[in-house]
Length: 549
Ligand SMILES: NC(=O)c1ccc[n+]([C@@H]2O[C@H](COP(=O)([O-])OP(=O)(O)OC[C@H]3O[C@@H](n4cnc5c(N)ncnc54)[C@H](O)[C@@H]3O)[C@@H](O)[C@H]2O)c1
Ligand SMILES: O=C(O)[C@H](O)COP(=O)(O)O
Image (cartoon, rainbow, N blue to C red; front, top):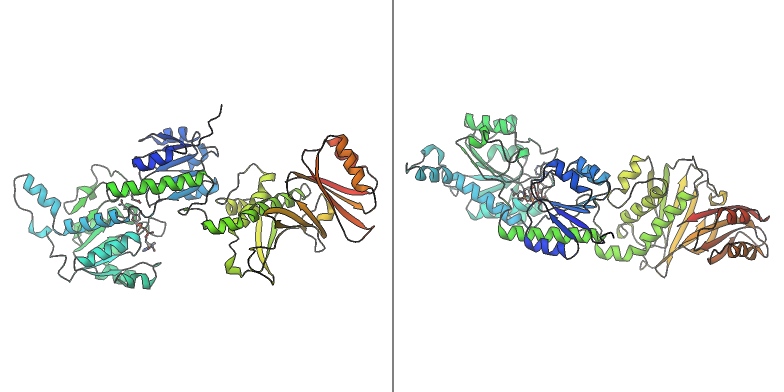
């Protein structure tokens, strides 16, 4: 018998509180120190994976999961060890735990800064070796002399380092291209340009993420612009520094000392010139490793992973838009409607047409800023793509998958008068430049058009092409275009009855009495080919189509 519980692979040490929480909902496999091959082998049996910074979650991991891996939880902040593009392409949500280790990292930064300034590590080694002294040149002036400035970033860790550095009596300036000036101002930090920051600081403490833009941003050129004798602290990511250039800057004396918690390669090679340099103190990526931080991170990530496995949208999602819970609740029935409209519209496309251009219209009395359509768009995309491919589409990979298949989805708002209580009056999906297997689904302007509303929190189809209908979108549908005349409902109904197909509803949408009409028939079972053939043979029926919702 299949185990109904999802399986979570915890690949690096996680706090007990987090593990307990995971166990209430899933089977937890704690397998630490897996080789890349072992991870790839295990992953096809796992619904979620939790890592810290020591595990590389590569494209191969997603490929080898064969679609089973739905969530990667990064128990910490930095997600540079997770291939986010590959995760997104595979519809795998990535969540992190961005807040619980901030203070620990900031404290470690300050500990490194002050230890470096007072050569604590060298002094300790000197005492232990019986020398009772440490070279004078390694000791800098008091950090609180007021002449020292600390160049920083004003993200979470950077802000906490800045507060603490100010408490030590340092002047703090910061460079952060994305930080609002008022936030910096609130913590008493002056935001300056990069050149000014690096050329005027006595201490430089790094707190940016590792991204293509920050990779090796500290290099020969930047070191050459620094004040001679500058001291550098890095508790962010090793990769933001060109480590060979740092060794050169240390040798030349531009950089007097460096205190490093993070390295390009972790652990660094034992013969690393940087680690072995006399003016470098090094710690083994310890910034987040306090008991409090690890307990907090474990709970934060376990909650995010369990929530994501339950299908909830995670607040700390890294590769999917975040939709607040209250918005989600309000939009829930429209989410169902959106997917069904997409599913219906694509089934009306004649084979070989190739869907390229989809227009979605949202009719609402709300202002454009009051309606978040990202989730609706994703669900329409899901409805359009899933029936014609074997790709699993979700909020994470919807836009990517549409783009990859060359489907352009445009959105427009139809602004209505009336009460904004209801988020949406109707949603309309149009597919342009295609032929339809049900010609009546083509609107006057030439596109396949379907429109739906939510009634009593249930999705209803309200228009096909130019025909107004009113059909609950459940089960499957038979659409027939016919000449409006008495007895049609009975004729079709009796064929389905003879075939033991249960009819859930029938409605007729017509342009005018005795003219063309579209009959929509909801059925609980799929009619046989023979039954559909017999319906098609009824003289007044001009065309018909069977659709699964
Ligand atoms: N050593 C550790 O154990 C440890 C612990 C926690 C965090 N970290 C690392 O510390 C760093 C900061 O973490 P955080 O939680 O403060 O993240 P955060 O996202 O709150 O802050 C990052 C800041 O960097 C800024 N930034 C982005 N690109 C930049 C650029 N090109 N130049 C300058 N600034 C830029 C952002 O605007 C943001 O303000 C991350 O690299 C994280 O991985 C390390
Ligand atoms: O990005 C982070 O959160 C820190 O670098 C901590 O990493 P760790 O979880 O591997 O200690």
